[in-house]
Image (cartoon, rainbow, N blue to C red; front, side):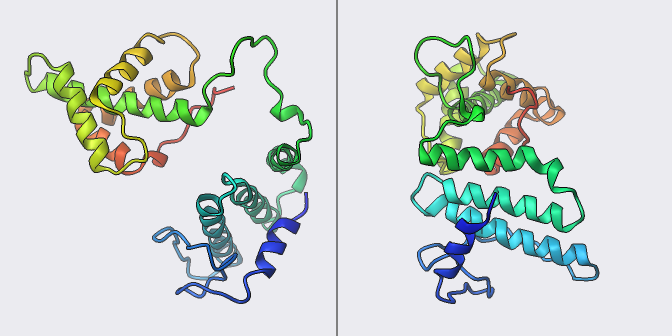
Amino acid sequence: MTRGARLQVSKSNGGVKDENGIALPNNKIALPTGLLTTYAPTSPIDSALNDVQVQLVIAKGMFEQRGDGGKLGAYNSILSVIDFFVSQGFPRAILDPLSSVAEAMVDADRGASNPLLQRREGRIGSPPASIGQLIMEGQLAVITECCVRDCQRGKMRPFVEPGTQLANRLIREAKWATKPSAVQLREIRERVHRLVGKKSEDRLIYDMLMNSEEARLDPLRFAKQLLKNPNAFRQPDNFL
């Protein structure tokens, strides 16, 4: 796996830098703010951490803004992680699974076949929903469930309808890209409920989050935390 794609982009920036002095991949990419944590360079690993953070922030900007579906940003993000571990003495061979993901992205862009991108044998019918869509709907089901439980704890009768309305209001206030109606949130919650015991990505997300101590103790607060930072919660290990 080469870094030609990143080097080509880097050379095209014409020396443009952001307000922090970080070289931009091109003058159309605005770096995300508030993501860098600078470590005092008291050891080589501190400098390496600073470097990889800069590369990851640039990659995130490319992922969100370059207009290629996030391909080059995701590709460069993977390479930055690989480069960091190699710089710390990790054998490159143990990072082959990450390298293979980056290679699969290139193959997909070229229209070439790759084992990582082959559909699982035994699946028939129309293509399933994307993993991103299922993760989002699992989170929406969690937010709705937390709001419903909060209304139930408040002795509301009925509590499902006001719970879905509360979830709808919180999602709109959080300015998520998706804005399902209260009716749609109720349908998502009920659909995910019916998946109990099944290996579905949205149900796995739902179970993982709703079984947390935070969700049990204060469901409304947990819903607000999830809305504020949906990426703060790691994905289950058993998606495949």
